[in-house]
Image (cartoon, rainbow, N blue to C red; front, side, top):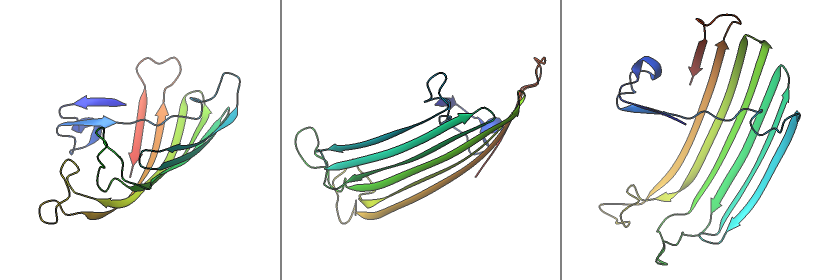
Length: 173
């Protein structure tokens, strides 16, 4: 995670007036142990506050020139969560899912091309202001449904023997 304070329009576009929070996802090499070329991680959990179920699967491989990472996860909160004093947090039930697919190709020691696709969805009833109690007039509950898709394509070029060239090009949608 990188936090850039102030105007960052030269790096992140004209909408970066007050600053930018840039999140970089892991590569396939990050969860691999030295000498390992592929692996997987599966997680299943339950929490009794809110009767929460979570599950995720991550698959990753690094075969020299090509590396792949796939993640699929979800969480279902089936009851209202209880606050510290035992009071329920109204409308804290939520279903969400998250997917990430990432492929990197290094045709030689000087170039890396990377493509990633991320998808996030959640749905549930929620008040617009979660710090206030739901009220039919000032804080009416709304049906929330969010679907977010991100595509990212990058190219990095760092020629050997050159301290002057370290190019990074990023396209995202």
